[in-house]
Image (cartoon, rainbow, N blue to C red; front, side, top):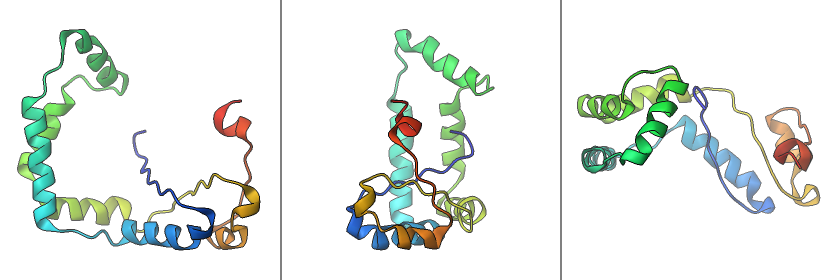
Length: 136
């Protein structure tokens, strides 16, 4: 969804006390290796350059863009943006939009195995049932 940051970590219940702080540390202090960012950037640019929207997908692709209120090709925007920016832009984005934010945590698993007292450090707990999560 727009304006949401989703992060995921899969772990065993007894490792939650290590996994959650580690995930938050990554979000707050994003490790950045310039060469890796440049390599990823080039990979995305090459994928956009070689990708072709098949005629049968054209309408669906257009509708997905229109559904979010845009009337232009997002891949073109992405391509142009990537060509103009480097690792410093990614770091600025992380500093402005990711670091220091409030996070909601969803933990799924057996209640008896979940360290509830540890999770209470992050705020009030609310237990959900499968019907609320999955609709059945």
